[in-house]
Length: 81
Image (cartoon, rainbow, N blue to C red; front, side, top):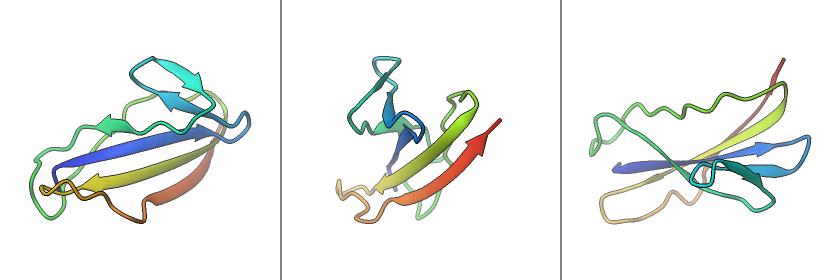
């Protein structure tokens, strides 16, 4: 794995986080998540946004050294108070 991309959706508004613009957008946005160490079969990664109270969905996908993207991104829905 050489990189991880994360998409964060606000399920209450249908908006997606765009880390480059530092804004919410109506279109799905994949954002880079740092991994350390890169290049192994598995690696820890983090994604640092602070989310207000609401319902959220997080999607994550990996990219390997040949540039192939994970065809089935992991998804997790959760709530913050």
